[in-house]
Image (tube, rainbow, N blue to C red):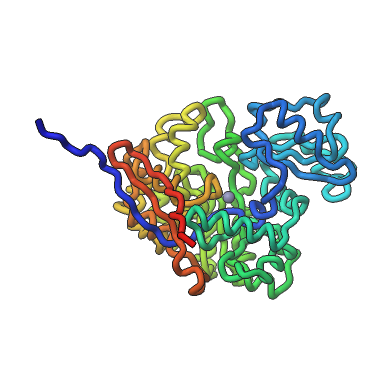
Length: 417
Ligand SMILES: [Zn+2]
């Protein structure tokens, strides 16, 4: 009798990597705040009720699909902004309204309107960040947590503004976090703050979670998708950023949104404006034709392999053949000629952070055209930036099991003292 070892797992060591798309000032500000994640309904209600009554607070990790909070529930609670774990969706308690009305009157009036919230997501991120507040300890806690999952540096796609930039600039993470600003925040920054930015972040469509991405066709439930910026406004914003010498990152998930982004970059080129860095964020449903045009324009695609999961998670809303067309990495690399690390870069959007999940979905995707090799994924993330010698030994170990089709982060080995 022959015994064959069926254990196909092997270990790989990875250096700390660079996350091209996350929300550092927001996630760091949320560090240490009361968290509803994993709590049973009774525990969650008790935690909400126990928050301070004399000031506005923020509670994170809500799952509005699991814990219903009606008007009667909210009426009892302290002044709170309660934010969904996905960062899409929130509730305000009546006690919070006077505080919010002072900070952002429009939000106090329209917080319960989901369409308004989806259109104003970037402003909500900035608001959450400001209410939560960022300090050096929170930043250090967040960056430490990222290191533990294999990330050494990040790009913050929506900086909360001057105060957050100042906290980062005064910290040891100065060279490890680079920031992007929405046009509204960009307007409030000084010339030197602007010069230190990667660029301006512009939104064209919404999200798959909220069924507001501009797919160019309706969702299965009939939702048409949302253009939060039409082609004219996008073109104007791109030209303004370009003439200021700023980079431009355009959030575009659906095919229609990607089309508007590429047209805006084509127009900028026709006008003779060079953009130091032109990126499309997400680009999940980019077509073959669009890929070739973007490639010729020198556009960088900033994508998140963990969102390959949308092909499985969102079959309830994506019309055929879109689940198969999500994140077409093989087409982008093998046909259109994108090169990971050069004009195809990877990140997480914090959903979740770190290469473990990204590698799981890259090596073992549900859709074959999404497959990335280990080398392609690592090249697309690239090595962590701004890390001096004290951290040179950082990194993580992953266990890859080709049989079970799993990738697992191994706990760092304990060093004997
Ligand atoms: Zn994002």
